[in-house]
Image 1 (cartoon, one colour):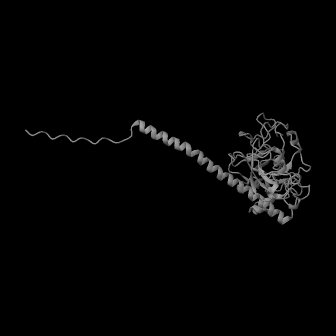
Image 2 (cartoon, rainbow, N blue to C red):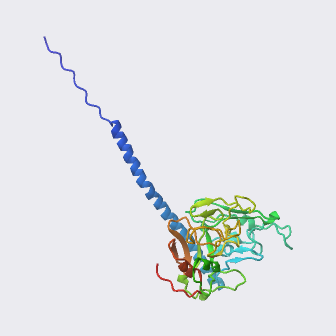
Image 3 (cartoon, rainbow, N blue to C red):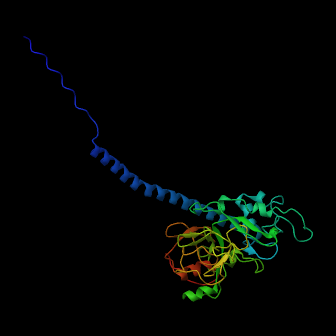
Amino acid sequence: MPRPSSVPSRPPRRGFTLIELLVVIAIIAILIGLLLPAVQKVREAAARMSCQNNLKQLGLSAHNYESAYGSFPYSKRTSRPQRSWAPDLLPNLEQANAVSGAYYNLNENWWRTIGEVAPNVGATIPNGTTAQTVFKVFNCPSTPVQPRLQSKTETPPEQNKVGSCTDYFAVEGVSSAIASEGVTLPGDLKGVLRPFGEGMTRITSIGDGTSNTVLFAECAGREDVYRGRTRTPAAADKANAACARARGGAWATNDNPFEIGQRTEWCSGANSIPGAMRINNSNEWGHLFYSFHSGGANAVFADGSVRFLKESAALSALVAISTRNGGEVLANE
């Protein structure tokens, strides 16, 4: 009797065991964990370069203004018409239409929407609308909340101060209040960009040298208050327990510029800003430079160069670069 043919054996199944699958998942998770910080670093590097480019443009526009008018623009005008340096520089930032007669009246305060003073009583003023325009050159992409509006209620409502915020400010020099931090003050505390009424600053007026003197720098995140990296949303009401305001956020406001070295909190009016006075301690008006870059903040100097100011920089060095005729000797850092 013939023997039955043997049943052919089935080839073994190929696949992942549960343990192998878990190992693969763990490896993928580790690779993603390694990749994300690298991606974040690349993004921050790109944002930092974009921020530096913005400041470069501001510096060049200030030089173009100086070439055309024989002096740098005023940091601010505090009497009618009230405004910052920004409307004066917009034509040199390829935004001449923004400050043309149809969109901005240079003889009116920056927030105006309705005329209050003869002969403009009842007249429509475009400034308040234009001041709410977001210009990319005024904002650092590293700042987390974009765009932002300064919103300060006034009486009468025609004086409500609403404007698109910027992450940069004009460095007016140094406040004498910084002496309380143990810093020896130079004889001249003025910066390059100064308020209207003090006389014009020419490039030849920068005795310390254009490469040693700051024009614009970062004070990012205003009008939200940042102390360290802790954010308190802006609430411009001194009667409110939640009051918080890093004043001077709007690019058009005459509150934008300041002299560095102060600890004045807007809500209380007292010297209450805590922490060591250093870069990135606080973005409140009058304090110091502040950015969302790790380890420091960007600034553009009067020679047009953009540099990264380290958090570890000594206060005496920050005083030196913020004054135009302080006579200090700066060491290379």
